[in-house]
Each structure stands twice: as structure tokens, then as C-alpha cells.
Amino acid sequence: MSTPRDRIERALRQGFRLLNRLMVLLWRLGLGPSLSLTPTITGRYLVLTHTGRKSGLPRRTPLNYAWIDGTIYVTAGFGPVSDWYRNLLAHPQVEIWLPDGRRAARAEELPDSHPQRLALLREVLKGSGFATMLAGINPYTFSDARLARASRFYRLIAITPGEELRGPGGPGDLAWVWWPVAGGALAISALARRLRLSRVDRPGI
Image (cartoon, rainbow, N blue to C red; front, side, top):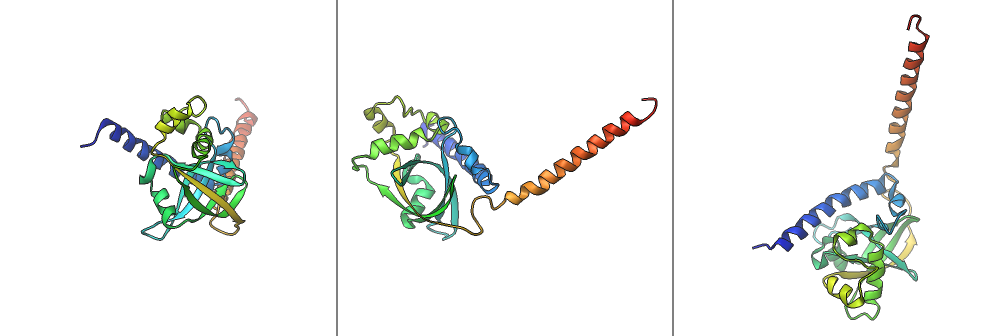
């Protein structure tokens, strides 16, 4: 029988799943870098492309991150049940979309015994904006002991960026959508302006 906590966590996961789809779409439309403009509020984002452990198909997941000394750190806030986390354990070769480009990368989980785990996790949570606050965690004020208790189920992943990738299938692959939208908006604006001018030019009006 599920507990109230289980139901809340399930609702949060469903909500984040819908939000993730929207955020991936924004990246594909070329708006991904703008999501990280206010990291303390909205968060700092990348998109992780990983391989489904059962399907073998590419999957995309937006994640908050911290970039420290050449390594990118992310966390699975829902613990080991996260699909993307289980996928990269099976297939550690991944692809990441960052505000400054697209790279091949390799992912590796850091064990709980890692001496810098808590400090690194704190930095990731600082880059998670409102999502961390929704989870009831304040990485700016929590003591190490309190943060360790609150994040005991979190998994910390280190991602080592590799070569820059180019070609189709990367961020901005749907940016062309903006051209017909912008063209349509300009056409409507021009038509509305012409109608206004024609009304002004009519005698007796």
C-alpha cells in the first residue's frame, strides 16, 4: 500500500516528466541556452542523450549540473529508480548538450564513500534552482549533516566531456520552425497595418 510520501513522489516524477519533454523541445528549438540565464532561480541545464538499456534507442533527459575543474556533475534526485541513471550505468558513453555546444562524453557514478561527494552534490543542487527547493532542500543553508540526510538516496554522476560533435540531431535541429512562424507574424502585421491605413484613407470616417 502506498504512503502519502510515495504518492507525492509519484506526482512529482510525473510533473517533472512533462516538464522534461517541454525543456527538450526548447533545446531543439534553439532556446536551450536561455534556460540557464538565471541558474539560482530556474537552474543550470544540459541535455543528456543516453541509450535505453532495454530498447537500445537514444533517450534525452534535461538535467541540472555543476561544471567543476573540467568535469560535469549531475544527480539523480529520485535515486536509483531514475531511468536515465539506470541507462547510463548500462551504457556509460553518452552525449551532452551544453549552452556552448554538443559533446561526446563518458559518465561514471561516484560512490557514497567519495571524499568530495557531499561538496560536489551541494554545487549541483545550487545549480538546480527551484527544483531543489521543491524537494525541500536548501543547499545554501543546510549543514553538511542535514544535507547528507536529505540527499541520502541521491546518486551523483561525474561526466567527462570529450570531443565536440557536429551534424544533424543536435540542439537547435528544429530551429527552422521559427522561420515560418516569424514570416507568418510579419505577414499578419503587414496586413493589419494595411487595413488600418485603408480605414484612415476612407472619406467620411
